[in-house]
Image 1: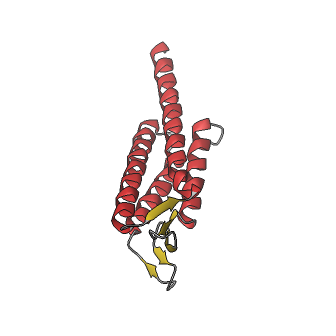
Image 2 (image 1 turned 180 degrees about the vertical axis):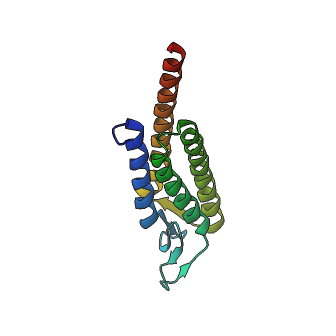
Length: 151
């Protein structure tokens, strides 16, 4: 199970998801350049009052879902067809994560600017890793089918 390269890709993708859940995604600045909020996956922390608004909870839910399904996909190494469907669903969820992130940033920034941190790029790296894992599982499935034809 762990000796397969696609398992390592999925494990690294899950680790990146957990790291992304705990770090800020970016900062909102006013038109004058003063910071007024920090964006996390679960909340927006306002700088002036220090309060949290749970507006971007959907980002958190999508990322937790992707991380959980990726870890579940590691355990499904004997059922490659189901593993491929699960990986493709995770990739679709990550594309939806970025669509929701962009929509939220455009709704929340008003007339200021948004500066993303490096953490905002981690789901993209995770998406690439999931694609590589999908290709590895597909190669395994094609190898098993070709060996079945030889029997």
